[in-house]
Structures are given as C-alpha cells and as structure tokens.
Amino acid sequence: MATRAERNETNPDLGILSGRLLFAIQRELFEGLAAQGFDDLHPRHGSVMAYLDVDGVRATDLSRLSGQHKQVIGTIIDELEALGYVERRPDPADRRAKRVCPTERGLAQMRAADKIMAAIQDRHARRLGRDAYAAFKTAFMDVTTHQRRR
Image 1: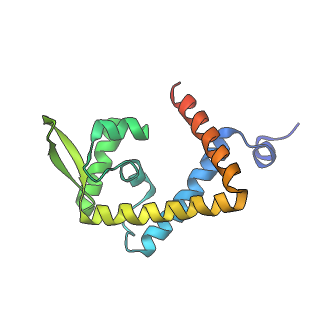
Image 2: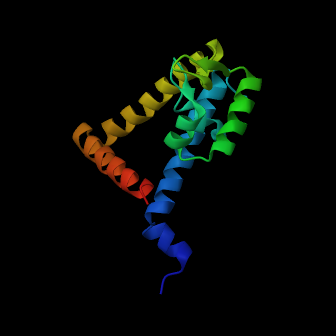
C-alpha cells in the first residue's frame, strides 16, 4: 500500500493540487510585483487586492468573494491602508457603510498584477492549447463553485 507521501506524489487529491497551484502562482505573482516596487505585499494581501474594484468594494463583499472571515479581511484592510494601497470611503449607496477603495498606489499594483496574471494564463493556454485551457478553466471553475457551496 502506498504511503500518503507517495500517493500525493503520483495521484494527488484535489486539495494537494489546488494548494500546489495556489502557492506556485502566488510565488510568481508576488516575485513579479516585488520586482516592480510592490515588495511590501504578501500573499495574504491577495484576499483583498484580488477582489478590489476601481470604485471600491465593501468589506463584507470582500469577505464573501474571498471566502475569508470578516475579521481577517478587516485586519488585512488595516494593513493595506497603512501601506498606502487602500483607503476607506463612505459608501454613496449607504451612509453607514464604507467602501474599500484603491489609492493611486493600489491602482498601479492592480494593473501590474493583472498583467502578471494574464501572462501566466497565456503561457498555460499556449502550452496546453487554447481550447484545452478554456475547457480546463471552465471545469476548474465549476468544481470550485460547487465546493464553495458546501
């Protein structure tokens, strides 16, 4: 009988594969961002920066979108605010609520991250073939959506 380590090497489960993919992408993304002057960001900041819109997003929506607890998102927003990437502004639709909005530095980081992620996706689409990559991404999105509903 194979050990867990052997099984994870030859026939990794979805959790192992997802983790390997996440860590590899985070490493390439954050190394690329650091090379462009965003060396104060860390992978944990991605749970806010990846979902941030130009017009801002409510913290509760960031929590829902990222799958992180509200308290964790609040801490990360505090960190990003101190680093100069985001600021909290009143929500025009609800005066009691705040929107997390990117600063100029945040917008620059978002543009840089989008370019890096586009290059990663394009590299894999060229390697697998565009149709195969599109089918893979569709299936991966479906599995992710259904797993998150549990």
